[in-house]
Amino acid sequence: MSGISIRLATVEDVPVMHRLLTELAGALGKLDRIRGTEQDLEQFGFGDHPRFEAMLAFKGDQAVGLAVFFYEYSTWRGTPGVYVQDLYVTSRLRGTGLGRDLLRAVRERARSLGGRYLKLTVFDGNQDAISFYQHLGFELCEDEQPLVLRD
Image (cartoon, rainbow, N blue to C red; front, side):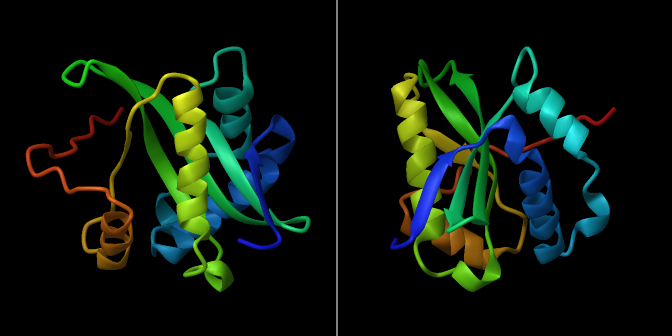
C-alpha cells in the first residue's frame, strides 16, 4: 500500500497505541469495556518481561493501524504461534488492504521467531470481520469455544 509504513511498536508509541485501542473499542460499541491504561501498556508490553508486541502502521507521521499480538504454544500442533489480540485500521483506510498488511507483518515477525500459525477471535455477530478473515484464509474453529475466567 502506497505511502504506508509498518513497524514494530516501541515504548514511545504507547500513547498512540492507547488512542487506537480506544478508537477500536468505540468502533465496536464497547467503549465502556476498555480498562487498560497507557501505564498498563507500558508495563506489560515494554517492561522487564513483555507480554505482547504490536505492529503500528503510519501514513506519514499519522498512526492509522495497529495489531497487538502475543506468542503462544500449541501442544496439539507441536509448534509455537501467535494470538492476534487486536487488529484496528482507522475508518478512512478500511478496505485498502492495510489490515491484511498488518497481519502479514505480524506473520513475518512470528515466523522470524519460529511461529507457524496465527490465531484470533472475533466478536459475535461481526460478520464483516469474519468475512475479512476468511478471505485471508482464516478458518472458523468449530471445535473450540473461548471461555474467560475473570478476577
